[in-house]
Image 1: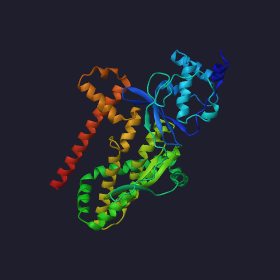
Image 2: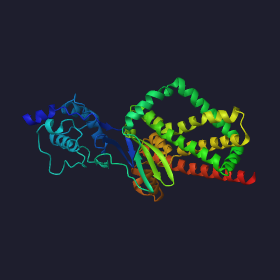
Image 3: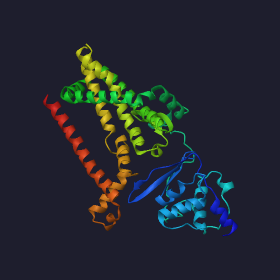
Image 4: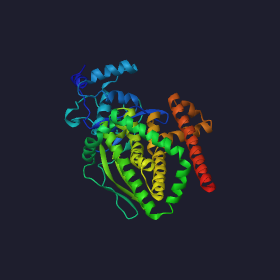
Length: 395
């Protein structure tokens, strides 16, 4: 073995500390992993074989040791030229710690083989996902735009987590969820009268303004809840701000590493947090509605608030993009681009295209299940709207 080849075999590559790797995700018929450089914001897809190698670049294992693990897993060894391709691809993207100084000399890679989008292991594609150089300043305009509310969103979320994070402990969270379920049962049992209360609310501008303000505040808490729960699971919050599409103005909270949280269930908890917060927000109003001695107008307005707030929370769990329910279902299916991949697969099935058979069983199950589930959800929404309209017209 030449000195250069031996130096290459003993090289111990390490990813930069702020480089994130996702779990395996379905992407069409393929299985991919996402890799993100949190400093630049760029990310790209790699296949399972590339991920197998990259995930082991911890500065402790040498290329010889990683190669031996790869050979045991996949039954083949990588030669020096392939290693050079992989290292150059990662170095070009700035993902290796000290890439310029520490990447050893070795056999030259074939011309063009180390292009940033190329895959040096399995012939797949290290396809770019997003590639912003730096977080851009939020767009501002009269009719549409956004603006940051805090300079350091992650620090702000950390302070919120220190203040209210104890509520995420089972001893607090479980009783609160039991109360939420009990509240929703009460609302379901009184849905007919609450529909009438909601109709009447829209005829009273003063009470309607108050209810709308409370619901807007609920959406702000919804967004902050995403950030606090993400922080609880080790996530980071990139931005907290306001976004407007006049006449609608909403708050937003962007979790920068949502897809890279430690486990699928942590990502589901983060996505679910907003709707749960909407319902927790309603608990004191439910107590007032049920037990406080109120005048008829205020009592009915609180009833309408409970119905509209519950509908708001449930609507966020509808499994269509860009709602939280879509993120939850995507995680349950272990897929990225679930809606688009489902549409592509179902079109292939409808045309009886042989390409549909190339999808692995897991992908076929996920896309067929999401397609059928989406139809069922649409039918249920339509049925609920028709039933509500019928009730209001007959009361």
